[in-house]
Length: 604
Image 1 (tube, one colour):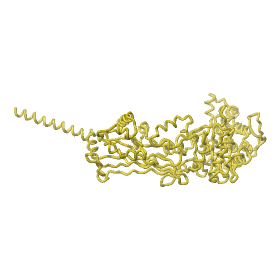
Image 2: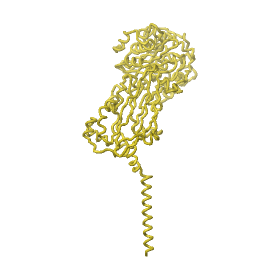
Image 3: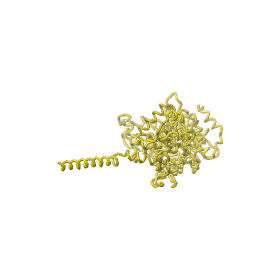
Image 4: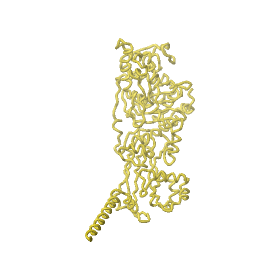
């Protein structure tokens, strides 16, 4: 009997031992709450956020820099005798907002009562100075220093973009697992496109605390600390003085200005009107300001140079001329009578050659040119002949960069539209269409759609006599001082370079004696340009359009200007373009009467 009791006692001891072992395994391996509690009592883990890379203009002027700001984090376990009334008074928030912050904090994925969790974010230096003397009255509240973006000038907002906290949706889609809740990320513009280069790398510091929560120095002399790595700086091709001048000229107008250095493809100015002050989308007021800006009926967040799609108007006649020369359906000396019974025209001219037709923007001339290109008699079937001609025309026009994304270093670039035979098959629900159905393409109307960046690039292509570099904002990244490789590659058109001298001659003639002579001509430099007046829905005025480059030889700047609802291209757009060229080449305008005309905004 004693033997039986002995065995029972042994079995009980074994079972108790097994239970303790299982419990110990659960505590030490499966459940990390106790480890967190132990570590939380002794070690405080603090993230060290990196400095985001700075952004400079082409002349070394600072555009975007970092300003200090402060997040308040809470370790719930350390909170004792929390005076909510005092807290609301110090931080100037309501009781309801305080409750909402507690709820939001505990809903965060990374929340633990033993670890620091974001409680109040983005306190400015001024706000932090006001509250820091009170922080020791709130045990469990810790300060996390970080930075936010600041801007030297309230300009270039649509190109720069903005930075804000990564959304839950984007965090869930982050395959790299680099980001954590609370991290800031570029949301648009340069900040988004160059996020990888700008963001840097987080560091971490471990600090020892005693039983009262007082910091006692680094854990193991910083053996486990890692330093943050700052992001790389970016040098852009932007001339910030030119950019500000462009925004000054576009004030109160809708449209865009795009200026490019032809020899490199570097963007000198990228103006979208209307725009906004980039400082509004930083700091604690970001959310309220973003709501106001994003609901503004004038759409200041809409980046017109990349996203607006317009008919090109008469500036497209230069592309038609180059294509016709390549197809050998005319020569520079070909004369065509201005027969206004075919299509309406403007100005006093009659039997022009190709240069004169461009200078006077003759609609009947280019109606005839497109007909010759599309109906070359390759096929006996009229409909099939037009299809063959349009496909060939499309190939040449596409080589200028039309109808596709150029690949600029900004998100949300649109393609525009160069219609193809397949496009018209869908439009007419039949292949039975011909030149008489699509002749409006000849003068840049109809189904043609271009994006302002494409028209500036087109001007740069003519300036280069047949090739372009993909337009880009950033000319140098970090210490290497180079752009991304794709921006150093030349892109050639399908047009023989010899034909471009015709376009250059004609564009010089436009400014010196044609439609652009009254507001685009400059005394000290030869400007080559082309006006365009883009049809608009009545009763609105047409859009005013102008492209140009200068000087004629060894061009330094190519530009496109679109001013919505401003009428003739020779007025608003030509004036703005010539002022921008003058400002860039000479540092100032020598024609204050033209500047006054632009600022007045009366273009009738």
